[in-house]
Length: 235
Image 1: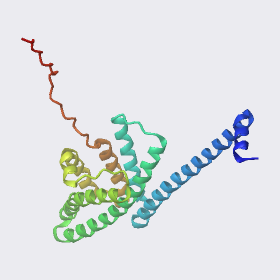
Image 2: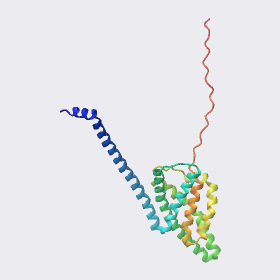
Image 3: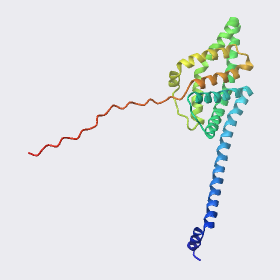
Image 4: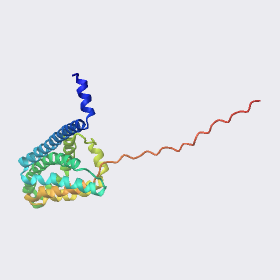
């Protein structure tokens, strides 16, 4: 029997068609299931890596920063009525977990530097020098923090839209100015064990206040409908 004859018979039989459809459907579901498993496993590992790095650098309180960033992004989406699927939200939270964990570890080290600077100036100028110098370190740290955040996003987030830090500061100058006050207070007077939790709260506030830059639609000039040329009467 030729292979073509067997295929024709199977295709002609209703039961044969049902078997082929069920097999095809099963293969598609299995392939889709494997793809979903790999997708969620990859992003879970990605987030775990960043969170573990943050804990290693600054202790468990470093986790407050990525969770604050996640809350800020969600608040931003609610404000601007952006709807996202569970799969999109999971990917976004995983990326924020990785980047936020690393930023939390960085901030933990920045707080230690500020404390060292405060101790030095405190020995020279007393309590005023201690708190004032730490506040100055806090404000000065905002610029490198923005640069580190931007370049971590460029490295680890595939769909990140790069933006120059100077443009980001220009677009959010007023909001960054307001946030500089809690940043100064957090670096200077907040107890050591509350610094990273407060930093997480600040990141939530920043994420809720800012949004992606929307492209302005250029207005097209009005075009008058073209009139057909009048036909000349033959002489």
